[in-house]
Image 1 (cartoon, rainbow, N blue to C red):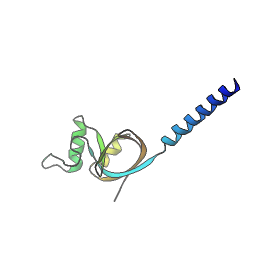
Image 2 (cartoon, rainbow, N blue to C red):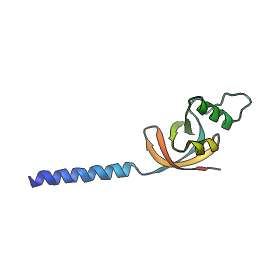
Image 3 (tube, rainbow, N blue to C red):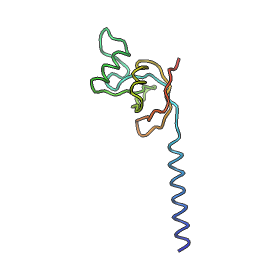
Image 4 (cartoon, rainbow, N blue to C red):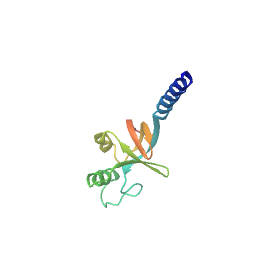
Length: 108
């Protein structure tokens, strides 16, 4: 009986530590754009920022394009709008293809 309780306790602690390690924030740098246009904006006469905002308003969502990766961004939509079309650095937790953004700054 004691062995089973010890095994259960060890399993629970290992699971909690594994979850904690997986939740460590990471930093990503790239261009803040939208999932409709990604690398190539298509609205004639509009800046990348304006095109991004229009696409998001029409049902798209903000993404970070970093090299060949396109990662969805979840978090402060107002802040994303302010930095649309710019090169940015974001910190947050990556789950699948989505970054839960905890901080965002302009990257020069």
